[in-house]
Length: 233
Image 1 (cartoon, one colour):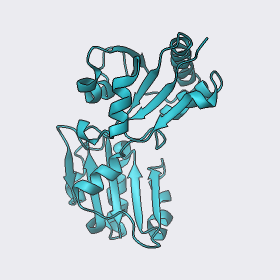
Image 2 (cartoon, one colour; image 1 turned 90 degrees about the vertical axis):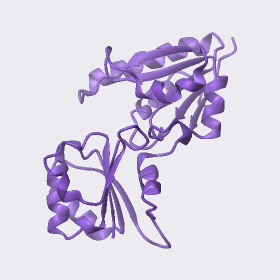
Image 3 (cartoon, helix red, strand yellow; image 1 turned 30 degrees about the vertical axis):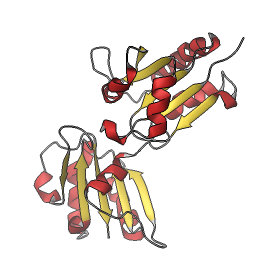
């Protein structure tokens, strides 16, 4: 039996032109594409981004719900890994599409962990992708780091006050997963006189892309979904 190769493919934040040449080539070459989506009735964002490259290729959609229960999530990822393993055992090559970069705050790592238990490491290939914060910084012509400056990339914690020492210590702070605590984060940035040094970006690379440096106006806007804040002191 000849085992096929698996590719975890980062497809960037949304703009199809931000796919790397390697990602585009592999998407075209593999036999089967697996894509994640949040619910049975929902569309896969990853599939929409890569659709122009698929050209009739067989696509398998797998539901990975937006939940925090570890056991339920684990069962979904293991099920997907088993389905991928079955394809690989047929000799097929398989690509799995993931938004942004596969190894940067991506649920792809859970699939990767499962696959490592099932197939040889040399059959697993991860293809990097452009992150949302790289794309946002480029849109704003904003340098993320120079010389010996320190950069922090951190999801907003439940206790927003815990961000204070990070904001005080690092030169550039990239805040991910700001949705539920956007107003609290803005309040903290205002208190620390950092709003004038901050960039808010949401849905980067998509049709409803939005960037602003006026964070105060965002309070109560509900714009936090799929958003980041870059603080550059």
